[in-house]
Image (tube, rainbow, N blue to C red; front, side, top):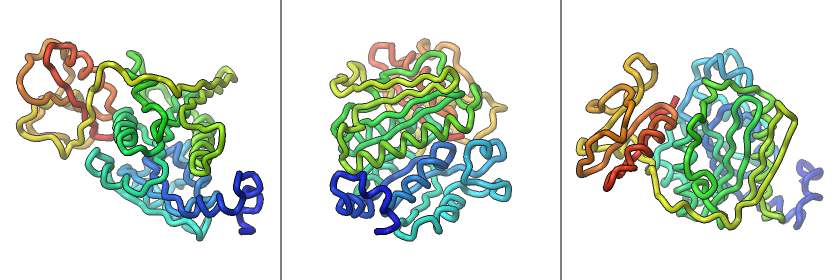
Length: 320
């Protein structure tokens, strides 16, 4: 236990709590900027098993904030690089890399036996999907988001309200990292708080980080926090998150990406291109599915379409 000497003294039950960490299994979704801080922190603290899910490959534009990667890693799978980098950090920890896009069906298969889910992904669709699944399974979820020089971390589900209770809808002007930019130290700061929340949940420290949101604005040097323990579930359900593999030929599918927009193919029979007024689409029996890269455009289209009487909309994401 000499490895953990400096932290065991801070735990409520000392070495018994360290044993709890060694027995824990954490699912980390996303091996990018947040993951670059979250993963070494959890490994160093002695979390026994960490499953890391990410389908993406290292790009040169990642390197200013995704500090687990090197120039020679460009083009390689992120989870493979992460497993190699963390392998020698702590022999007590086992890293399980999963190089695939997280879909609802695959997420359900990964959740049994998981102690805490860490949402370090760059996809709003993934965040809502993980919250819905964790709320159903009773598993704590620690989710973070960062844009520019600010962001937040929150502890959801596992006895606390889910993500939709606090964020029932996406703000109209919500940008992506590629649109707004992001500064590396801000990502690392939010990732450190995310790791701290995860350890607090695993050790059942009080006050609980479940039901707590911490916001950090490093442009104006401000921080704030609030609790949402009693937040009610939203009155309106949806949009519902759907995996690409769950789409069938009976579904009406609209891929909102422009024809020259880069990215993986989605569905052969999808209507491709932006739709200015989704609410004007005819309501028919069956499901209507909207697709985009991050989930933002699909979410907004689904919300507008769902305003029609009897309409039910689903969104799916192809990933970046």
